[in-house]
Length: 87
View 1 (spheres, rainbow, N blue to C red):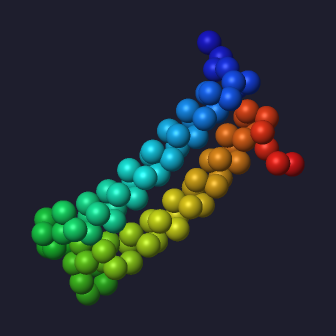
View 2: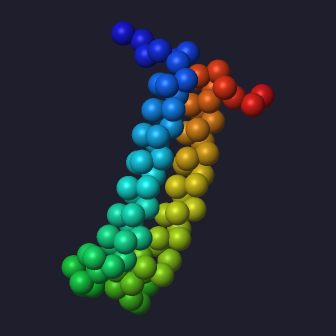
């Protein structure tokens, strides 16, 4: 069965699902790896420091930037699927 690509409601649900996925990844990386799981990650070394510190200082920013591009690419694809693209 094909999904209904003409409904605004299904478009909005797909958009919300994509945002939720991005927010969960961002929270896991920045808050989870950088703060909560830092003691567990302290034994893993990367670039002269432990990976928990790396996630808190650089990794969460890098992942955030990657998520911005991922979200933009996925939203462009979603817009084309539902016929609401800008071009």
